[in-house]
Structure formats: structure tokens, C-alpha cells
Length: 444
Image (tube, rainbow, N blue to C red; front, side):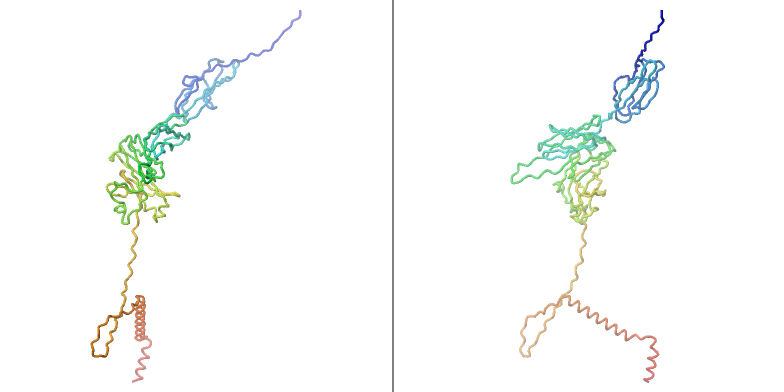
């Protein structure tokens, strides 16, 4: 018998380790807010005792081991990857387990300073948010929207019915679809009709702003979207919180009938009067005068209007009517290519006039009147014994005052020349006294 040995090569495949990776005890992907705390737990369920694991966040090693690890430093929105790796050992191959963490901005934007500017068939809705967000406004069946993420929002609703009251519901959502809502009520202007022989005048530009809450001591900024009004912002600060405040601004070309005094005739305008750019009627509902701590109006005037009327920027001011016109403290804040910008303090709201004080022209001195000389006519007596008949006086031609002035100047010059010559004959130089005495002695 012959001894023989047989051999066979074979490979035993390594098993995959079984890992446990959870976030807040869940094996699913996790969604959280900015700066939120969550717990990541990583451990080996099946594997060599000598094996070890590594925990990574977006490819950066957090730690080795099997204990839990708290993550609290995810302040900004975005998606992170958490990976758990089992390094290969004799019996187990390298194994990977991973989860995603989505960090969201879960704080909804805050809507403020909602305003509306209306015509017969359109409404421009404007508002602000404290963070970038999209825009949507709905009134009845009309909707307008914008996907742009911004903090100043302006949308126009079209196809509205004239003379109709609407409530526009607005919504702004941040990039993670966390939203805030608000609303504003407005009435479109009435269309023409009802009068014969002509068309009715269009409604003046206006802006309506509804503010749900004005906090005490914090300036509420109301932005006016319609640039034709000429008023850019209203800043309001209250002593105590005010709720459901409504502000209406109307631009007027003429003073309303309630204004009994012309600003041109008022002492507030100064001796030269005032030239009005335009009027503003500002009314505020549900805000008591006693609760108003301060208010500022930011407005602007076209520089072409100033140039066309020969006015300078420092002549412009804001005037308020409250039984009489009063000039408000007004500050020039700068200019651009088109407008000169101003800010004024006001103790309350009513009718305002954006106007420029007109300088009083200096009166030119009156020309000196020179009497016109008339020659008295001579009376010629006839050598007869009869009494002469009275005759009408004959007036000689009137000489112009210019000739009289010239003759007077010539006479004055002649007198001066004569006087000068006389004085020269009276003056004798001291050096000639001896020669004069010698001449006198010779004559004797």
C-alpha cells in the first residue's frame, strides 16, 4: 500500500459585522432644527471582541468606541451624514452603516408692516419679514405669488372689481416651508359713471396699513409701497402696546375742505408764504394720541420741481394742520439723482403739506424824482394907451431833467475850478518871502 495525502484549498468568507446606529433611539434618518440637541448611539451587535468602530460626521472622525455621543454643534441648516464603520478583523469584514441628519430652519418668518395701494381694478400688497422667505397673496379668487426668498415683499392683485371691499390673506414661508400669515382689508376705488358731461376724476393715490401689534418702546416701521405718494416710511413708537392699528395715507393735490386756513397765509410759512409740493392726509385708527411716544415721517421731493421753481433744498419743510398750520422740525437727509430726501418729527397725525418757504424779494429803491423846470412866459406890453387884453400863458417846451443835471454839474465844476484858482493865488511858498520884501523896498 502506498500512503497518499490529498489537500484542498478553500476560503472561508468573513461574515459581516452587525452594527447598531441610532439617532434619538431611531434607526431612521433624522430631522431637527438649528442648534437642537440629539443623541447618536453606535455599538457592535455581532463581531470580534477585538473589533472596534469609528463614528464620522460628514467624513470627520467624531470618536472611537462603542459609547453614545451627543451632537450639539449643528447651528446651520443643511443635511449631514453620520457614518459608523467596523474595521475588518480575522473573522469579520469591514462594515459600514450610515444615517442622514437634516437640519432645518424651523423658526417661521415674522410678517410686519403690511400695506395696500389700490386702484379701480388692482391692489399692490407690500409687507416685510425678518428673514428671507417667499410671498403669496390671495383676495377672493385672485392670487399672486413669488418664489424668491427676500425680506421685502410686493405683490399686485389684478382683475379686481371697482368699489369692492377685499381681504387679502398673505403668507411668507422660509426655505424649509415654515410659514407666517397675516391679512389686510382694502376697498378698490370706485369707477366713473353717474355724472353727465364728462369723466370723474381718478381717485388719489393711497396706502392702507394694518398692524396687529405695536410693541411698547420699539419703533414700528411702516413702508409705503406706492412711490407716487412721496412718503416713504412712517416710524411709530408707542408708550404702551397697541393692537389692530390701521394707518391710511392719501396723497392730495389740494388741501381738503376741513382745512380752513391757507398755508400761504399762515405765519408758519413765513413772510414770503409757501409753495406746496403736495398734501398728505394721514389717519390712524385705534391708536390714542396719549399713547403715541414719537413719530417720524420720511418723505422726498423731486429735484426737478425745486429747480423749476427756483427753490433750494434747505427751503423745504413739512407742515401739519391742527386748527392752524405749524412747521415741523425737518431734516435734509441726502439726495439721489432724482429726489431730495427729508425726515420730520410730528406730534400726531392729520393733514400735512410738503412745501417750500418762499423768500421775500428785496424791494428795489424808488428812483429819485427830479422836478421838471418850466420857463415862465414873458408878457410883452404894447406901447398904446389901452389896457392890454389878458392873454393865455404860453408854456415853453419842457427841458428834460437830464439836461438840468448836466448843467448843474457843469456849474459845480466851474465853481470848483474858480475856487481852486483863487486859492493858488493866495498861497505863497515860504521860500519866496525874502524876494517879495526886496521888491517892496525897491519900489519905495
